[in-house]
Length: 478
Image 1: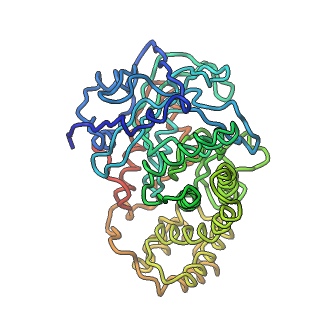
Image 2 (image 1 turned 180 degrees about the vertical axis):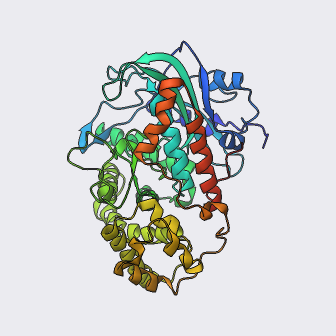
């Protein structure tokens, strides 16, 4: 695709006014080495024809995009961090650089940065990003999208030539600036800040802007009804991404309220992990010693965060009605979890009761067998049409047990979902594409030691191959 970018600042975040952000200047970097550019997403915003030099000007030196913001916006928000309220948050090492419309579906998209320098919200930090952190985010977003999770897109990664001191990795370490493409950066924490400050007019303004821009179908003439419809919609979107995380075996690591996007898009990857096998208490952040954000606690955490959003809406809607919306979250989440499970197995639904029984048997089998998480879904994908596959899979010995015999019985009446690519060569492999922590470290090691990026590019090609098999995203071009 090679089309003209569509920038419409009149409806963009800048129109909210300076009560919602601070105008900032990007950092000046000593070097600019382009390490990754997402051509597929660039095509969707009409920027795929940029030369590498022009790309660096916009996404390394932050020369404004034509027609977009003349200066970047550091967004203001608050948030609960590990359930402790922090009123001193905000974009501390990033900013909203610009917005554009997707040329395919018309959505408004944000160019958000990470590592672009200090802002009024840096709280003593240097505002920078390690190159390893940038590499990890590219890998996380690529893998999640291939697994069908609605995630931010890593758009650009540029190494910036500084030596950063960090306490959680060998230092000094290399620096980078990342640009991600998001469908909004409006967080639960964005609403928390306004509620905390008692800015009811701005709270209503943000609510109306968010509905008009990102979910116009939930607009209601009554402010009370708008707030309730908004909470219902955000709850549904958050439930969806949470269910998809669970079926991807993904642990976000830092599910603070400032990391929950009201559009339901997964984003902001610091510590993250994929499960090696089903482990309910598996955590991603070494500092999460209480396992608050463990794998199995993610659904409850998302609900806790949605309760915080509902509290913000109390000036606009009645408490009993808000509570009634929240009470539906559990049932809604389990429906979406069941649907996500069927998607990962490549099966069509047989109705809520049968699907629920199947779901319970899958989780029981995963827990008891400790089969590698991604291997299980690889081996059993479209299993009713591939009866030979699980028996021949890498975990075939485990599949001979009683719990898997029960699973086979439950699967027999299920039909495969339309459009499965079961003849794709990906499914002829013995093992699936995975993204376990040891693999991430192995990818990083040659980059750190010898500036060898071959494993990084090999992994992105492997992810694209998997994505093509599951028809989740187009393959990465050679």
